[in-house]
Length: 105
Image 1 (cartoon, rainbow, N blue to C red):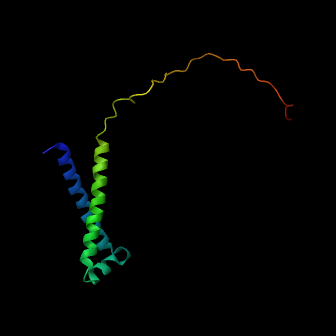
Image 2 (cartoon, one colour):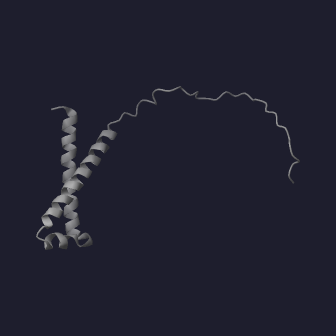
Image 3 (tube, rainbow, N blue to C red):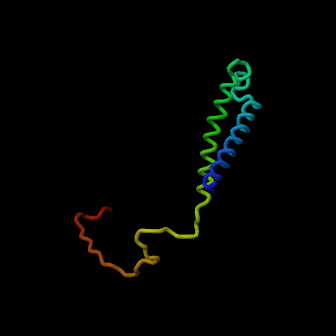
């Protein structure tokens, strides 16, 4: 199995595991009366399943994005473009200023 596919599957399983923990925490703490709504209704399992699946897809996507971004190499500097000088030239350039109005006091 390719490494990227394996990485994605691991991130999806991790995301859905976090989703299960999150749903369990929501029900345990009875956030906004959610436990009463889910257990008090005959269709409450549908709401719990929807919370699990939607949060699982969200957490899986975030887990995959964080994992991929953490794989970046920071050893190299910026690539492409024009190289900027590390030190600016140290010469004075005269600038002529003409006074058009009387100075303020």
